[in-house]
Picture 1 (tube, one colour):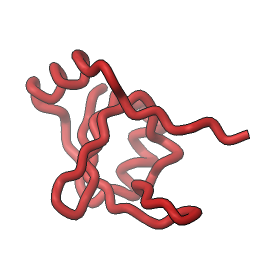
Picture 2: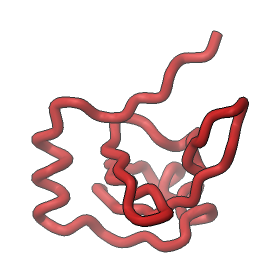
Picture 3: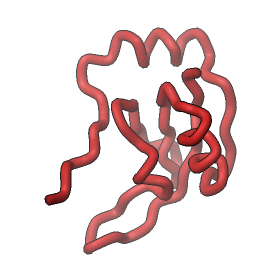
Amino acid sequence: MIRVYYLETEMIDGAEKPKGIEYIHHAILEVEGMLRKLIQDTTDEEHNGLIAVANTWREATQEEINQFNNAEVAYIPPIVI
């Protein structure tokens, strides 16, 4: 289900990253004020992890679903070896 999460950021290895980064993949991540707005199609496990760290969350609007489905470039975290 496509949902929207508003996340604070934290410094990790000298870089600012959204909380819950381990659950974020193939998503749209935008700056909204002091938070990061994440639009992602989440599994139940990802949803539970993200709501534990999100300031707020909600179901995506139709406009956000369209934005997500039409996104050419989506956030994919780097693979760490």
